[in-house]
View 1 (cartoon, rainbow, N blue to C red):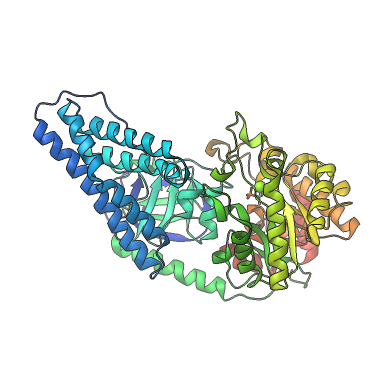
View 2 (cartoon, rainbow, N blue to C red):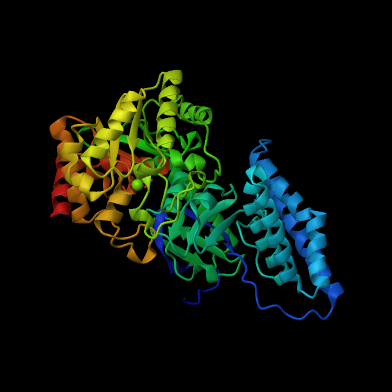
Length: 541
Ligand code: PEP
Ligand code: MG
């Protein structure tokens, strides 16, 4: 990394820009769990006991501070705040403290005494089963925090410095990303790929994000950086004034693009619907022509118990009530989107295992309850819900899903095309379903045999490659012949350079994170249909 001139934003790092927009501010790194060093002899038991007490008090105080912030953010809606308060009470538990202090009296240093007290409490809680048993995992988080405090290393988990910051992390899970507060200005991670679900969640929130940025977590907390979520460039050592100017310019650019409006059209008026990818009603924004991908699994990422039929009806009806046209995707669990409540067994090769529609092979009730809930929500709201299944591979699977969905009262049934075998048989699949939606994220992963999370394989995952575009073209052609819609809902649909190519290949809709709609609308409006087709011919050649 070059030494920047004082006060200038030197380009210090480059990663992959995965969520557009620019941001700047001080960084905070999300630390992983602390590593316990070898036990050390205790020379001063009183001092060691004080370290135990201080570590527990610091953990509880930090949780209370985060709870207060959560309460302010949600203006009184206590969900997250109550959980944090409950955790603070666990950290304050006098029995736990007494046990850790006893550990010191028995000769353990503070970190090991805390580790063993928490571990024993966890085992006792897990043995109780039921709701309390489920809370056992929370004690691991508390243990890591307390041990970090005793060792004097950064606390694991999302930082809560009490001011806006750029979050740096080795990697983030979808659950971490979903839990980010409004004080996060941008995300930069060492690992991750352009279509990883963390990138998708960042885009959904309109948060600039850069992934695969090697070395970024080496920056000291508090260093001011700038983040360009399109180019992937990170400037280091920007001044506070420069950071404020960058944020202001970002606001202006967002306002300029947001001023564009209307349905998707090429320059000569050929319609290509612009739809939204959402994970819940909270992601809905004005500007799209409906919802092209409602990723229902995002509603239940951190759930340890299956969501009930009634709860699902409420969540789906909330979206149906606010959007004219909604394509609901049935749960796409597995691989990088684990749903703990499903209790799926670990697999050696999860991306090629039980995920998406395949979960139905081992847990058939889950899909039926979801289809019933979608049909009921549609009845209650008068919406015409379109429903599609993820990870469909064969025409027989498509036929089976369509039959199940129609039998349970869903009228418009489609499937996602994410597996090359399904793309190659799109015409056969369309004999059974009403529409196709191409998931270019997984279709790239499986076509190029490259893990979508793998930072070093990002070039292979680029959806602009001819092999992928040919598969998209074949699906669009099958749709044209059958007179049925074929859209794209992978991240490629939100790329303003690729959107005219996809339109030229014949797709009828593009579904993307709401933040991407203005730039894609703008790009389409600059090319006639014939120009789009010309681009498509060049891109597939
Ligand atoms: C896709 O695979 O392109 C897609 C839209 O589904 P997800 O990204 O949720 O797997
Ligand atoms: Mg997918």
